[in-house]
Amino acid sequence: MIGIVIASHGNFAKGILQSGSMIFGEQENVQAVTFMPDEGPDDLRRHLTDAIAKFVDVQQVLFLIDLWGGSPFNQANTLFEEHKDQWAIVTGLNLPMLIEAYSARMSMDSAQEIAAHILGEAKNGVKMRPEIDNATEEQTVSKKPANNQGAPGQFDYVLARIDSRLLHGQVATSWTKTVKPNRIIVVSDSVSTDDLRKKLLRQAAPNGVTVHVVPITQMIKLAHDKDHFGGQRALLLFETPEDALRAIEGGVPVKELNVGSMAHSAGKVQPNKVLAFDQADIDTFAKLKQLGVKFDVRKVPNDSPDDMESILKKAQLELNKKGGN
Image 1 (cartoon, rainbow, N blue to C red):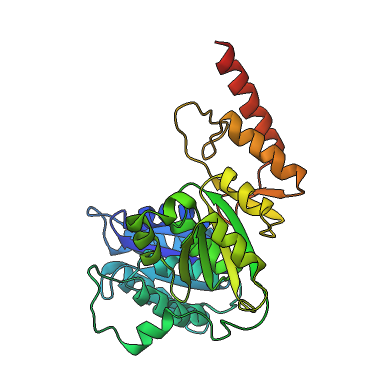
Image 2 (image 1 turned 90 degrees about the vertical axis):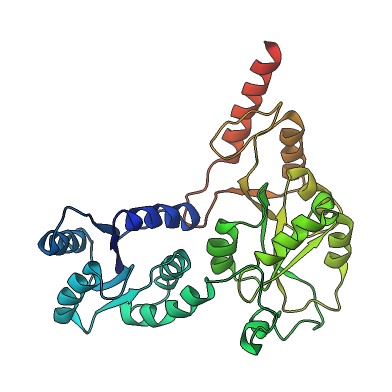
């Protein structure tokens, strides 16, 4: 395991640590170090050494620091001198860099290897609106689907998710990095007729992944196409369980649904922090279960799955109680 120290002037380190946990899940062997206005270099050095001492079974340490040449960098650099073979420092900290570091340490064993790897993601995370028309060829190519688009065969469905927010940080980063799709397909009749939402979803596409927005009937047709989608790894996003049921009943071969979030609205009960149900939702999940669909209830891959049966029972009890009042 590689330990990560996030260090900054002020509380930036604590804030970005919290943001990273929201998107990628809670992480082991990660510490935030802050350098406050009333502190000096010795205080900061002590904070850094205390943070490293909290790591368990860690020899490799990666420092992610806000500013080159600032006090957090300077103090980390003095510690680094004694561990040049196993430690690394990267400055210019941003959230894409942190998320990529979390992902990379699942497969990389060297802090210095991770440090070199995350520089590209940190740069790719800096974008602007409106876009510059004369984008470089490298930027253009990075948005294209895989070269095997159009090969004989059907989609490989790497994830199907119910999420009222559709494509957002948890999907675009943690789930995309885990299941590695080259297409994200938003399956929704309502969104497919909303030009603004379609545009915003396409603009939120992760690097190297193409985002499509299609109505349910079109997704059913695509699922039956055996001639054009060989080698294509598809991540499906449904706004509601009802949309997922219609697609599956139409022949989209989803065997498991990741249930990420269902927004609260009038008439719904909320048995946990992220899922809200009305009677139609509960009945829909019952039908999905009858079709043999399994449920994976978690926001991000690192979360422990919740028990869907218990959640639905609690929701039904709350609805019954609400109806009896």
